Image (cartoon, rainbow, N blue to C red; front, top):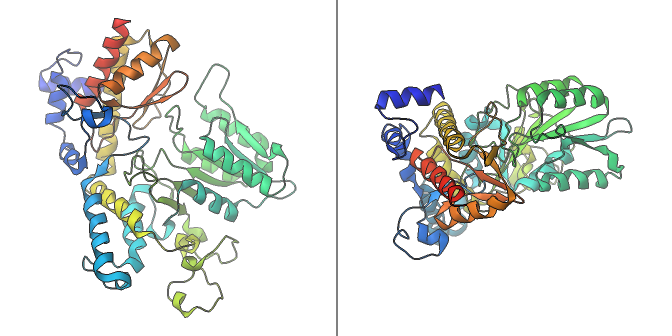
Amino acid sequence: MDRLKAAAQAHNVALDDDDGQFALAMDAADPLGHLRDEFEIPTVGQVTGIAGEQSDALCTYLCGNSLGLLPKRSRRILNEEMDEWAAKGVVGHHRHSKGRPWISYRKLIVEKMAPMFGASPIEIGVMNTLTVNIHLMLAAFYKPTATRNKILIESKAFPSDHYAVESQIQWHNLPADALLLAEPRAGELALRTSDILDLIEQQGSEIAVVMLSGVQYYTGQVFDMETITAAAQAKGCVVGWDLAHAAGNVPLKLHDWNVDFACWCTYKYMNSGPGGISGFFVHDRYAQDTELARLTGWWAHDEETRFEMSNRFVPNRGAAGFEISNTPILTAATLLGSLEVFEQASKESLQEKSLLLTTYLEYLLHRYASQHIRIITPSDSRGAQLSLLFATDKFDAVFKALMSAGVICDERKPNCIRIAPVPLYNTFADVKRCADIIRSTLASR
């Protein structure tokens, strides 16, 4: 907030102006503003299907927490791979006109993705989709015993995580109470770190795996991953993280935090496209652990001897030793395009802009409609998302007004609207327009 006030003073405009001059000044001075041109931004008419004066205007897309926009580079690279397939067929695996032979495509991906996760390339893998990878990681790291067999997740974990963990417990023929749920306190929605730590301290000797979300999908809360990881490992637990809403959103240092494993999708803040390929992390202390039982396949075999077809499995080093099948090039191509955009900005600059955007949105909402909105995302532990609760008699009207105006966000029934200004392509003007529509809708009711 202090930085926003200082910027208003420097630009000689009022932070609480009604004409949007502050937002325009911030966008004009934005060092990351050029990255917006890297993305295809739909028009109002395209996303609403409504014809009118504003139908050709660009929409205000604030839904990167659900599906990121299309990077123009992704379209180009995907088309290049289609052309390569048409022109080369199988030869494209080894001789590629753009210098991207398919046989080693994964290396392009992991080398660009590793810095985003505070990892080395040997610790990063790319395959499948998120829940499949969660199952594969649990197959390797969930080794229940008679006395240590519980998996700790959030009570409000994303349903797919809950289903995956519950089915793993059932697969091992364990009782239902092997699923341990971390609950917020009565009347609260965000989990307190101290409560998670207390639960680990009390039941840690019975917990085999702690698997929480890096960023809670509903509230937008960022968990203290470093502290929780250390506390759980001190009690002998394996620690994995679902980073679906953290990947490409918040700073991560998975290696330094000593995380055992992590998984993430890439179609939200990482913009790989609907159902895009997933990524995963395995700490390099397991890089040469050939005794770690895992589900395997041909692509996990040592790449130097893979084509000898010996049927004697020798795992690749690091995360590559967990990749079961060869890389799906067409889905990896769209991720590669997005990663090239990320390379044009530092993690620090993206985080700085993200915090300014969400703080500006929070400020406007408090100023315009604090009596009608409860912001449940903690101000001291959040990424690009703000989750807003509305009175049930106002919720539907506000969401409908936003979507009808081409302000794209998402709803979680019965009364939550999630808004995510993404620093790669969103602007301060986007935030102002969203807040103005919320204000006018509430005022009209």
